[in-house]
Image (cartoon, rainbow, N blue to C red; front, top):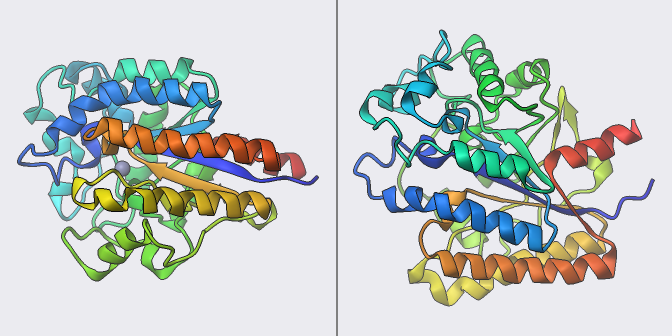
Length: 321
Ligand SMILES: [Zn+2]
């Protein structure tokens, strides 16, 4: 079977659970509150352009309140050496229906929307290569993610893109069929988290505007299976920065060039970001995204290129097996 490739989009839907350790002073709170407007607006745009998306969702945010969340907590919690990574540490500090952390209504919107896949970003935003946690704790975490989602979860995005290959078997045991791997370049290798500015971070930012590391597109027959399929990422859709606004068009062009490269070569291009990235400068972020989707619409017609969620790519792969 010939496959023409396509655009895959995955979103790391996490609200405050993805960055509670970095947002101690609350400076990112406006972005988090705004996610309640960003998600419906994204769904509307995806529907308009018939875009299929995987929403890799943190289990904890599926709760409507703190008391509901408490009903789902695992007995076995991650014993990170550095406790600041643990989302369980902040539960006491947040309010009963803290909108920075709870998004049950948004999850229901995603579930009802056409062509949207609910995936998992683990229950607790679990860090798979940080010191102190273990396999049993990870399995317990995934079981809670399934329970609270009340929905089959077939795709996973590992928090902070920390891929621990020995955990892929555990994902398979829970019915997960694919994960988002990192682009194949040394800049994107799995590593423990370190905050602050460094050479790699600067290169990654530069790579969003100019092609430093390649297109990271891939053909259907190059997709590897290690217990579950590796639907690797191609690029992070970086939010609009007012200080770099003069480069916004470069970012757009960098993405569109990769999309065209994928379509011409019958390959896949996998773009990802977090809804909270759009939580500031909403109009600018949505405007760039819509420009990309307009371009995609033309490419789709010209090259018979398609839009896929992660699990739809797995369905293609398993159809071939
Ligand atoms: Zn995350």
